[in-house]
Amino acid sequence: MLSYQHAYHAGNLADVQKHALLAFMLDYLTQKDKPLSYIETHAGRGLYDLADEAALKTGEAAAGVTLALPHFPPAHPYRQAVEAVRARFGATAYPGSPLVAAIGLREGDALHLAELHPQEHAALTATMAGWGAHVQKRDGLEMALAITPPTPRRGLMLIDPAYEVKSDYDQIPRVMGQIARKWNVGILALWYPILTSGAHKPMLAALQAAFPEGFRQELSFPPARDGHRMVGSGMFVVNPPWGLADEAARLKALFAKL
Image (cartoon, rainbow, N blue to C red; front, side, top):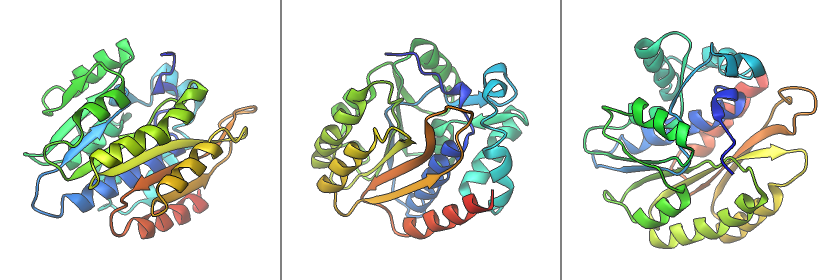
């Protein structure tokens, strides 16, 4: 299924969690003077306008990044990424994770992005022109298995599917296990929704059994509207970098203020 479009949800609290932790991890990796690879399996369009009809229809950004961003210190890599994108694209622009990554990467780092949705892929290709990204119109997990271990070998992969069908939950632990065996030094970061149905729980149980040293953070927030099934979001990280637990604790405290 290819019906999901993130423009309706861009900048929501789930994005704040995902992008803040992503920016922190990339900032940590780039402190060392060695090249790295960034791989993203479900990249979306890369750039969103929080003033467009889709974003205004749900109001999720107004309850998300608009409230949260001022609570981040000016030097935080997430805040710096958002502000850099707004300086370039306008005050209502919001970066998807491909742009969060691209802003944090350096010359010599590799950037691999997959997006299967035709319109989203076309928009992603336009957004990432000039950033040196390798953009593929391909199933993201298939791409991940094909290019790992990447060159450079150190790096990070973000897995962020739409979870449109139950098979997403069943497939991810198996594929992450395959990727980890091929790329044992890679940081594998999975975002997932916290749903009232509990659909995510068997997937998390399988991941924790496969990766007992993995890092997990779950944050709760009110549903975006009456009847909305998502009441939080989570990140599960294989090979978590040093300091991630402390950063996640700071992020949890920030969410408590909102």
